Image 1: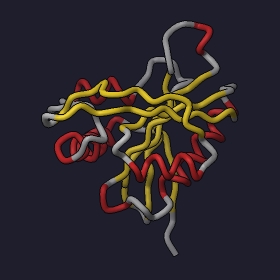
Image 2 (image 1 turned 30 degrees about the vertical axis):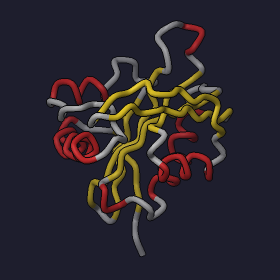
Image 3 (image 1 turned 135 degrees about the vertical axis):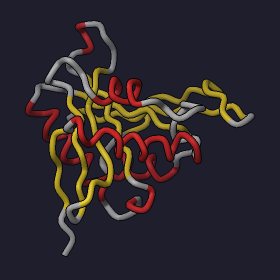
Length: 164
């Protein structure tokens, strides 16, 4: 039987997580970065100075397979009860239920930290992520057309929300 666990990000996890993220930068439209990120930029995206916002490492069968995080939606104080959820999984681990488990885990953490709403913004081409969030009770609340440009094409984003 497979074992799935979550732990707070440690600095030693960052290079492997960055490699997972950069896979999506280089090979997909999932990320709107057009060039691989460097360690300093990636570190800034996964470590927040406020401990309320955290990144958690997803470990499956003892091996690091991705991360899930809840970060600020916006910097203004009125948004403090809304968090932005991001999940990245090793490409070989998609479609195995790890993403749904990560959503459920981060929702529990977010509730404990006083969040009221969670959102996730996804490239409209990313059908697996859209399906995963929808399956977990998120509803589409926005669709922005042609706001990104990567690989010679304009890309849409969709935002999903769940009141927790």
